[in-house]
Image (cartoon, rainbow, N blue to C red):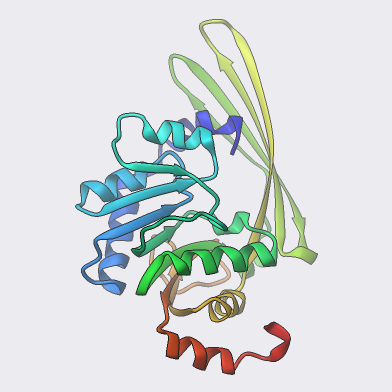
Length: 261
């Protein structure tokens, strides 16, 4: 997200961040009891990180977007860092890593994905968990993304966002062009923003293989927020991965075909 960033919170003002945080806390307490430290990867403007901190967790937020981090730092003393999830380096390790609301679907290259999983693994305590969600391949194939328009208006501006998807089936991707027309009412001027987002979707076997190659084990998967069993109607699937002990990692690797190593 570039220029889009400054309007992100306005466009998603209708998100129920408290309910989403409740959902995350339930997952955290279920799969990593006594969690204290969390790193929120792709934290955006920091709304979930701040709510998690209010629940008593020690939270660090990381995002590639300087614009997003600048917004996150406003009215907050949490540690928000500009960084890339594939290569960030911190001196700390964490009980839980979160990468939610399709952050990983923006990683479209296999090597980049392996680097991201491996780097996150290095920043987790042994037995720590990664909670990540992605676009779900069966849903993309069965429902097909459609053009959408969203309008947000207040006393200051009117935003019209058009999202136009193009399916790249050979690469398991959807290319989405976002066009924002922002009317600034005080000056009666229009600001036009166009950004192309390349979004990858994943099947369960892909996530399992990526996990196996990078020292994780898939503990569970479910529909994001509803916790239902994933289906062809499920756009977002949440996976809970656990960092393995070294002996378990070695056992896993023995069973991986040589062509994947």
